[in-house]
Image 1 (cartoon, rainbow, N blue to C red):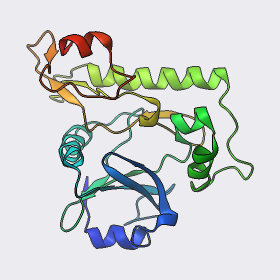
Image 2: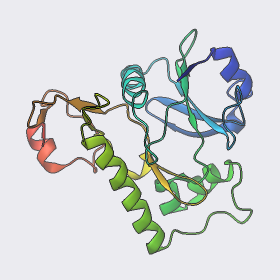
Image 3: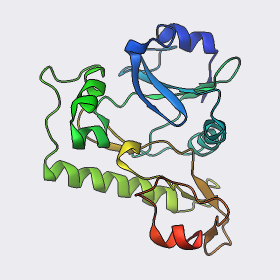
Length: 219
């Protein structure tokens, strides 16, 4: 994982120009960068933390810890970060098929965001077929299975994502899916039968598992 200077990321995104902004959330905004230090043959996504976001600062540390140690074809890898001055930034490959949320709705705002992605079809993205949706679901399950399965050889614990939703599932131009946004992920101790987080229920309303929401427990 590379450590970047914030000035490098600013230069690569046109000083975080609005025209390069391809998404936003509670953490801040995401910008497209064509290339950086030889990385990003298909482009890079630079996630810039909102300085006022305590959520973002906590999620930044979680994402570095979790993604920095995990590599799987159905997880969006963390290539590097910058924390030398100004807002903290995370660097990941650009998933040029956009988010599953945008690809499912294809409403006006979604089409506007998708149109900013390099390589986007001239006529815009077509609705996902049921076969494509099923393939996306299988990719997500593979990513979750990798996270949930501890590996003694690499000292990887079981990891719970805790925020699986269409916004956090990204597609490439071949509609292969990767899980993203590991800021709410939690590792489970090897000896534990379940993970209890009763004092810090995390996730997005409408996507929370009912058992977890009521008990604070994952099994």
